[in-house]
Amino acid sequence: MSRLSDVPVRVVGAEPARAFSRVMAIANEVESMLARLADIGACGSIDLRGLPMAPGDRDVLRRIFAEGEVSAVIHALGSTQVYETIVRGVWWVTHHNEDGKVAAEFIEITHMPEILKTPPDDVADGLEMLHAQLQAFGG
Amino acid sequence: MSKDDSLGESLRKQGISRRAFMKFCAATASVLALPPGMATVMAAALSRARRPSVIYLSYQECTGCGESLTRSFSPTLESLIFNAMSLDYYETLQAAAGTAAEAARKTAMKENWGKYLLVVDGAVPVGNDGVYCTIAGESAVDILTEAAKGAAAVVSVGTCAAFGGIPHANPNPTGAVAVSQIVRDKPVVNVSGCPPVPEVITGVLAHYLTFGSIPELDHLGRPKVFFGETIHDRCYRRPFYDQGKFAKTFDDEGARNGWCLYELGCKGPVTYNACATVKWNQGTSYPIESGHGCLGCSEPDFWDKGSFYQALSTGTWSGATVLGVAAVAGAAIGVGAAVVSRRRQAHLDNEKQPKEKQP
Image (cartoon, rainbow over all chains, first blue to last red; front, side, top):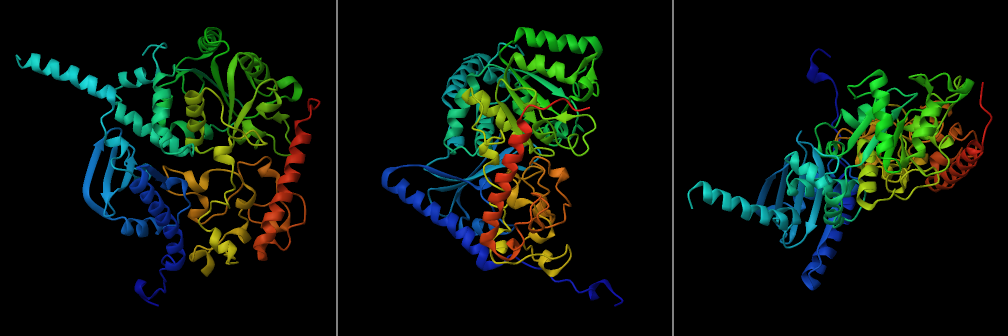
């Protein structure tokens, strides 16, 4: 054995059948929640950090709920990525901290994730700021 | 930042937007295993909460718990909760020293009597009248007893404070005991682990601030929300256990395939902690995911229960030999774990009986 490439190394991937069963359980839960949203307007959410996931499971889940036509980034204490998946009404929300690590991750079944809405107190603050801006510009 | 500020006001003064605060609450609600919808409720409650005074006492410990809490996660969402608290005494971090430091502790206690949070890490030596740990001429046991009287809640951080930990290990020359054996007239929240998961510590504090009460505790005084299930219950390698697929050595094919580490001494089946879901280093991994079995560090007397590399089936964890066939019978381990659990409970109950001071 004279070269590094001669060393026998076998790369073991995730076992598809098992990964599939874990991911399918989550996907089925999303399906139930989406049906409730469609029927009675009830929102739902799945906390991905609370679930036992093997390396690779998340990738499979991301393929099922791939990015759709809406996405947004929130810059507050690190970034938060929000996108509606190709399954409309199903949103993937990932909160990162300031080091770029994932702090929380959810699949939200809703018309619009709460984090994207402007909080009511911020609307009042916004009005105040606009008045100040208009004064500054001589309005 | 005024002490009279609400938590929301103090965060806003630090430039934290409401949306950022919502994000913090979503992450905290996730850690507390609250329904995701509770993040909004938590944001409203935390926003109105007064900044609590926190007195943090350290005794027989290695500062690993403090490192876990204050260093590895800074700056993060979790650090917010600490920025929002009035940390009035913490020897590891405070600038004050000597009589000035002790005066700060006594002032904080007097001004916030009955309302402050008392956080303790490290075991408390009671041997020889507590002479093995003294601060400013007072023994640890005397300081703790006095400080606990005026506390709204007591949180024992780390296995040493919760169960005595390594200082309590055989032969325990200093007579080290858990905080709960000194403070008996109010509930003590045990956040065990060596060290504890940082989010578990901040989660308990956030729960107290949000709901004004301590979370529901298990029979060992640990918050059920974090310690309600075993590492084994939530382990991603559990399917391999159920199929009887075990790594036999740390470098065999089973280990490379990510099979169950039970036979290599993993204590996951009898260890209650949140590592498997909350994970470490900001959700990167936990020991089993890195290829090493769980040591059981959040359980009482984990240090004295034999080799970390002997399977539970050898019986060293409980001092019993009832688990001999558990490795090959998945169902048997459930029964075995229950036996271990009951024995451990009985052992702890015995330990909790008042003891004479040890020499």
